[in-house]
Amino acid sequence: MLRTIQIILWAAVAVVLGYLALTRFQDEPAATSFRPTFALPDETGTVRTSGEFQGKHLLVFFGFTNCPDVCPTTMMEVAEVMDVLGSDADEVQPLFISIDPERDRALGLTEYVTAFHPSILGLAGDDAATRTTAESFKIFYDRDADANAPDGYTMSHSPALYLVGPNGDWLRQYSYGTPAQEILDDLKGRL
Amino acid sequence: MFKPLLFTALLLPAAAFAECEPVVVGDLSVSAPWSRATIGASRPAVFYVTITNSGSEDDALTNIASPVAGMPMLHETVVKDGIASMPHAMSIPVPAGETMRLAPGSYHGMLMDLTGAQKEGDSFPVTLSFQNGGDVTIDVPVLSLRAEEAECAAAP
Ligand SMILES: [Cu+2]
Image 1 (cartoon, rainbow over the protein chains, first blue to last red):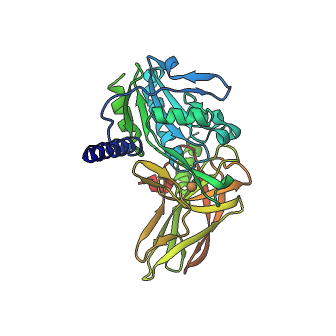
Image 2: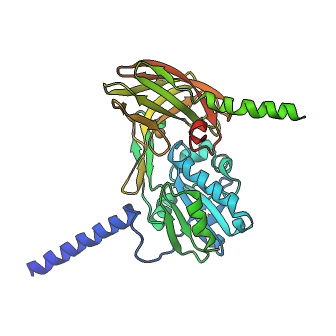
Image 3: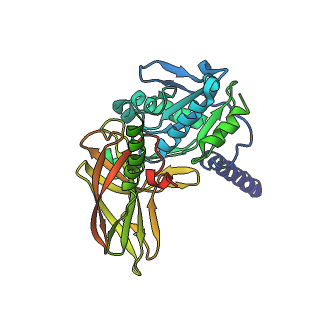
């Protein structure tokens, strides 16, 4: 009996560890496909849902606009991808999902994303919707207290770019620093 | 018609290379500074630079200052286990005989509390303070939002 309980407990630990590994260590390819969903307002307040983008490929990045180093690098690559895609570009919708929604709304989300490329759509929900969306994409973000940072905190987050297919399936991630050309080559083969 | 074109062609490389000329202070050589255009004034600007220590003693970049930023700081972008974070760097080592690059995805200067938006084509001064090497002030060109490296680094 005791032994059975022990086995069950260890199994529970294994499940939790496995879940943590899946959600935190995004360099590991996901074992099975899944369908991330979201319902988040754009800057005008209109709620945009994963459903309305059926038929398109989504290039999804989670970030915050107060981020001068990591975020511009990826946004710039997305911009280059969209430029080079040309007529195929209308089959791809790039999304920037804020993980620091309150501050980003105050700073101006559309102003930020369109400075990189006019096709990028910025979304910022409330804390609960943002958390739900991140869980749905199996990505990690957190707020780190930092007395020296503006407003006393900075954000840590999964910096990869995620590709969602036209039927809503999560297809793959492009890890941080993947050159635009590699993203293009992969994406063109799918359009 | 032809002459002004030729003149421009001759002038352009010179302008592009001006910033590549390293500023030397003691054993330290500071080169290829650049920043990226900001979107408005309320988001931080970034500062990148290359520092070479040709001496035999280790040094470290301990501070940066600029009249355009009320709150300049040294940061390091760390991507670990698939998570990116941006901790404050107390100092950035510049070991003897080595070159340290402040570059995207790594160490960077973060210029917060800007006095105004930084536009492409602008430039601003930054003073670097070293543990042993003293202070050096350089002029930092503001490149486009899409820039990935200093213009001289991209030149052949
Ligand atoms: Cu930073």
